[in-house]
Image 1 (tube, rainbow, N blue to C red):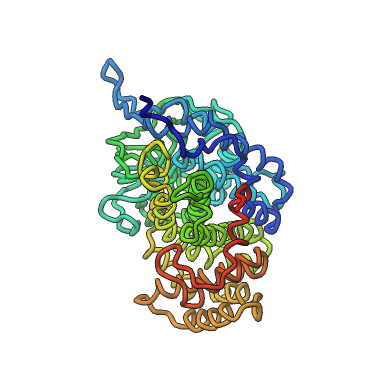
Image 2 (image 1 turned 135 degrees about the horizontal axis):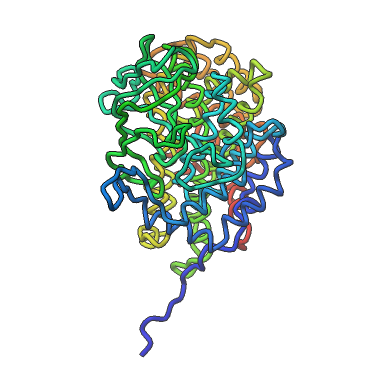
Length: 547
């Protein structure tokens, strides 16, 4: 007797175009000024849905990096070896400009938006390898604080050639960057760092120094070079630390261990010892935090983008399952309870996409606009805080839509769930983001006015939004650390609501404001109030479903 007939199981979600099927992303790309990149985005979206590349993403996580401290003869090598899939995924990222293409001299307007959209697409295949891509992208503004160093490194960084071989960077067409900031005694309090830097000559900006210390987190340790903080005679300063020295010898850069992390497993994070390690000062002596914060700002943008991409990934997997799986005689996507859950997940995803790409446009236009500079300064920590807070809950609910199948590793949902808290921790936890918002409010009042102008541009379109904007203006007029999370959350929701009202789908905008800004929405996904146009919301994420 046949006992293992397989039926009522959804087909593998593959062979699709991750860009073309993402209506909210396609609309946001055009709205934020990168419509010219649609062909590139569609090509990458097709690749992201290719089963061969989906399998490479699985392999890169199933076979994590391996630390090799010594060779067979006892010589220190301090290398991390990756599965070939990791390098193949990274090569696609670099060739598509995810490393640093927006900084190239011929980059068109909207390049930061196009890159953000590509990141949302390609990280669905594997998010871990994007870590060095993010740092390579973000390092350019900091390097430009030291023109002689920028002249050597930026041309390699902005190129689209990936060379994974472990050899001197000056022999390679491309280069990647990592970061070594935090130490075990300080974490986000980088001023508590104990690493020392002694001048090897004249010292000062651009000068050679010798670093001694221990870095608790060094991201992507096989990168060609790193930015690190250390105390020079004139105070905490920023240094460029290469893996290889100009004479072709290895820089003392001792990998103590790799971190055994919850997620991001395809990428290595290490503890590193500096022992007479050569570094060159970048920027002014004693202003290391100010120099490296330029890098941090851009990686925080990527945290928001990554969170938004993860939400779209979870929504797409849940929707795919619901339109193919039946229970109690009907497809899951026909059943009211599941429809409200999927609709609520869609609202969260669309709002996250709108906010992430609007922030990317601010980075595109900040150089020539005081308003956009204000959005960058205040909007970045707000977006990072809120989107990263929402991502784990969103991933958990999307996983639950698959039932027990979602809890099984083969579904890919456990990997998404493990990855979901990363962006909230990387580059400053939630409390650090809230403190940064308070700091920005004090130091950059133009940022407050820019944020208020952004939300008040939607005045009169939705009564829930209008009341929320009044509350946000009141909140932003009161600096209080104890209520900072409340202030930042309300500002993020008002900004998302305003963006959807001004440029999003009307049904999505109405439902978002009615559930997130009215006080009538539930605490769990799917606890929607009556009267919402759920069908219109779902039509954007279930286009193939015929109810």
